[in-house]
Length: 73
Image (cartoon, rainbow, N blue to C red; front, side, top):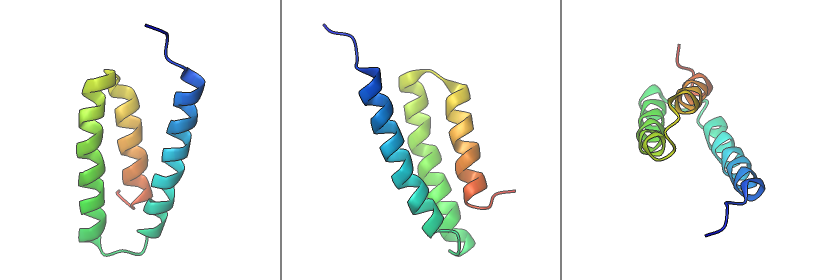
């Protein structure tokens, strides 16, 4: 079994993060319930991701950034 290609994985993360950032930017003017639903969906998905990679700090950083982007106080 070969080692993962971390450069390719990082490129994929960057690309997907750009897409997420664009989607979150489009939600800036959305009503609070819509933002809350987006935040809940992302947080839920990241909870599963945290279990997979075992990095709570990375997960928390992402959730914080998403909440801040959506206007959470």
